[in-house]
Image (cartoon, rainbow over all chains, first blue to last red; front, side, top):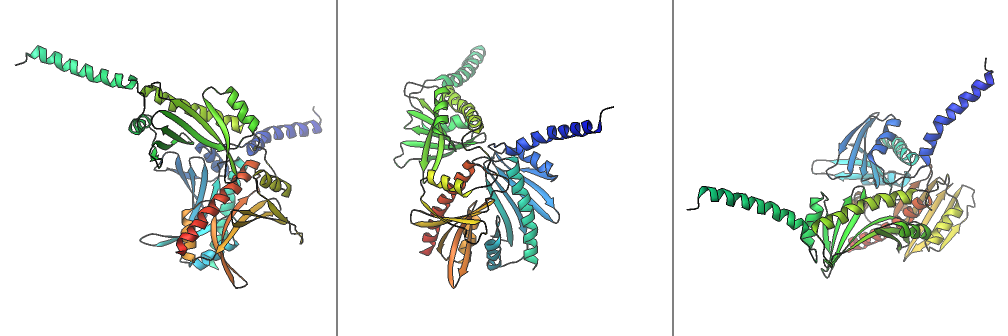
Length: 156
Length: 292
């Protein structure tokens, strides 16, 4: 019968063997950010998305729900990413400016269309010089948190 | 009246000539290629190109997406063609190694506004004669060169090491290699925030390093109305314009933020700084234009 310590060691080795590829991917820089890569990241985050092809080749949108919010992630030819969430609350430019002055990584803009005004909370990631899985994950997860913070900010 | 049999033969001959003509035109030798012919070549290859011309109209430019890469086809008076695509900067040694090994393309390191980048180029001398098929092969082959170069750039290049935190030394070193003279403001309160002050043209900029995990860069301009601030934010990526009032002094700041929590490469830092420099110029033009 193998000693208990051996089983523990074997278990540790097995754990390291599975973690190493994932960690290695996190440190691998790639460009462009291809659809398959982005979709895997979303799936690994357990974000169930609906993919919408853009009108131009190389552009795709990914819609997914996070609680009460619908987020859209844009992939512009793998060169840059854009993530946004729309709010229908009526807020002044002064209030949006107040958010922009305190927020770290997002901006709130007022989008005027013929029918109505909408607030877009958005962030972009420049991938021209490359990205890693960790960077893209951080970008998405960070925005997810900022969306919740923004909703609280609007409700104050 | 033409006999029926002769009419049938004539019809068959006409069809044959039409097909042959189409095939021949692909193999017809051209001594120069017109913008219209280039447009057709790109169209046949299913590339959607945006056409433009130089001021003297002697150069035609076709900008298009070659797979995942932005490419430009330039026609120099129809007599020689060049395809090029911009990549992040690589070291001189890496560029030289590519140039010694690559068959058809070359890379050069160029600098614009403090930003270094690599340009992959592929040239074709048409003046000795070219067929449409050869021109198409030139465009298609560039796609292979793009992928190979991209893979080459990504393989342990100069700027690819992931930095877990952005040190002040690293930022200082990057600013120096970009030819930017700066003043570093120490962190007297021990908050972990260091500021780097420098100028681009006449514009003063400040880069904040928050404990190596976040960067914020900003430039201050005279205050503009919030409607214009919002309008600018709607039109640009990677930055935001924000209005402030500090001690009764109103101003509009252009800001760029970089989340370094998940790691960052030197190349990404350079790109962040260089692209903000471009944004400052754009915003300055915007402020001046709207001031009139």
